Image (cartoon, rainbow, N blue to C red; front, side, top):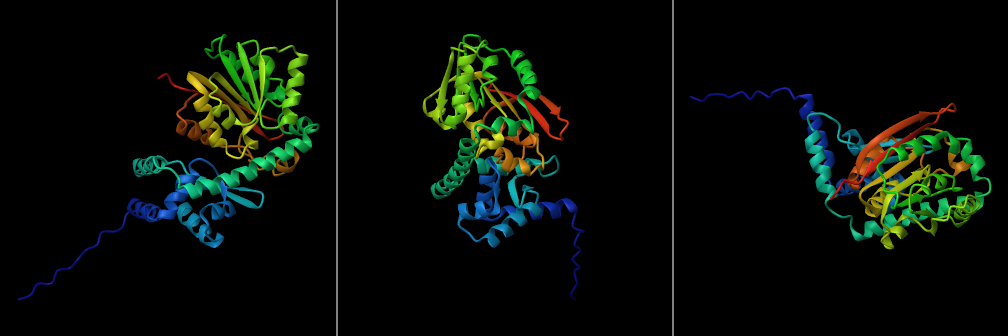
Length: 330
């Protein structure tokens, strides 16, 4: 006598369905490489297609799968959409996603991918340098349309004054512009280094230092990689309204972390995320501001801890974030 056995399938829970979508999205070697790359920067579809040497349609498909699984976030800038790796949200899969990302970040990108990435970043840097070379004489007026120096200078100065910094130490300002903030750094530190990859802008900062008799300021033409290569060590670094001009803001955090001595401080002032497209042409902006979580993530990956934060809303609709990070003691 045979006995029939009926199989009962339990209703699929929403959590199980979400988990299956996440695992499916992550279960592809190329998509894992994309996630590894997007941890440190934002890229458009065309840039990602070049870096991984696949057709744009193929890359768009992979990004759609990752986005549907909540593994990447996107933002529109003009006619382009830029993608970055999403932060693991609080939920039942938080620990799983965090473990996945930690594992990914423990491996280096392939040499070929690093080379293609370098080409993209060099193109971005060349475009930025060309803008400042062509617009050095009128940049201040254009920048003032968004956020003039007096709007944030006092707040940054107050945050700097609240920090425990050694007066015999060294400070670094990345992208000093016309040099105004050097007048706040010079009296507080024995030595100040002003670093800029635009010689025309650096000359403006030199002229300001001469005018104000700031005799302890050294001027260095180059980027943060140059400072790292020279084994510069500083107690405090300041980056005012610069990161939205640079090819890879995340790499700046990495470099500054290497430059900072233990217990050293980093002050970052920049725009919050906005959608004012005209800022690209008028001010040479490469990024339309940043989410606060962007800075927190990049700083954390660079080994920095988060300190104070302040946000300033402007009448023209822009918002400025002033952030403090520090390097923990050994």
